[in-house]
Amino acid sequence: MHVSRWARAPSALQALFVAAGLLPARALAAPAEPRAIDLRWEAPDGCPPIDEVRSEIARLLGASEQRQPIEVEIAVARGGGARLRLDLLIRAPSPGERVIRGDDCASMSRAAALIVAMSIDPDAVARNATAQPAAQPAPPSAVAAPVAGAPRRAPPAAARPPAAAERDLEGALWLSAQVEQALVPAIGVGLAAGGGIRSGWFRADGAAGVVPSSSSRIAGMAAGAEFQLWFLEVDACARALARPIGVYVCALGRQHWLLARGREVDEAFTHTAPIFAAGLGTLLEWRIAGPLKVEGALHAVVPLRRPRFIVENLEGAVYRPPAAGLSARLGLALAF
Image (cartoon, rainbow, N blue to C red; front, side, top):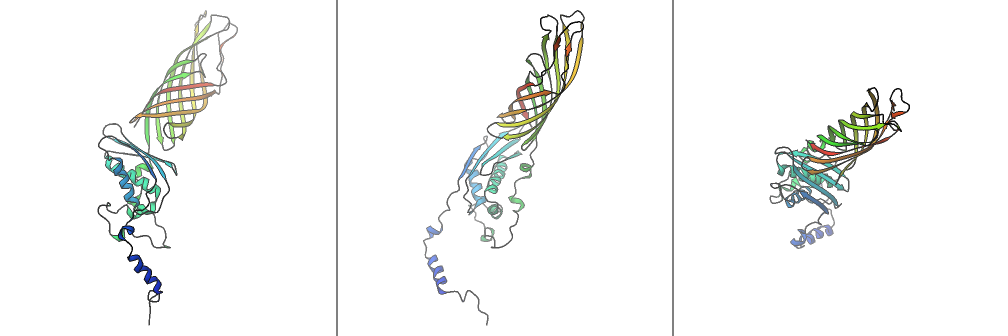
């Protein structure tokens, strides 16, 4: 005769189940220890309040046993037209950043809550992502714990962050005042304009600029030249800090054209010298409103060629670029 193992179990185990049934209902229903979720939420009118976002995170986590503290900042801003941009920054325990774009703030906030919950306990989210809200409990099978020893399965598609949050790509255009000391005789002020792309921690920019006027003369003489600098530039940058100010470390390559026109000379002359230079520096960006940012950059620039500008029939050079110098810009950028 076949006898089940439960029939052979000690009577003490049966007594334990009986005793458990006598526990007060209030004790059985006692809520779990609250999680330490430090959530900062900024959003325009028409978006869900912070309590609704917290409730959605709690619903997705359900009865999760994870208690690791997490620090999260979520900011929603309006971009061009009716489009919205949600920036989600996880500071601890594992830093990360996501960007979501859309037209419906409610659905974007739910996607952000999903990302936060996934970063805390993806297994719990896999069990609860498709469950109904707490006001309408799901069937027990929907929240059943996984079988011990069963292979761990990847979360269902509903529990994964939106693809837009994983593969974010942003374009930008910028206009800046240019301050140049590296390739001109005296500190010159000009204008630069450019644009580029940003993706995660990486950004790349292309720019063009001009420093319209700078002058130099032969030592001890009135004769000299007026200089004008034109350039094309390519930058590649890696982000070192995201908030509150974005900080990038950048490398650049710049092709210059330095134009000299004679001043106080017997015979007028014009001479243009192409000069390629490389540089290394830092770039700062600060979002002030929606897609509008303030950007500033400072680079050390090293010309790979240093031509001499001279006036024929006169002794002494008018100007020769230094071995290294500084270049800076400050302006506004528009992200899209």
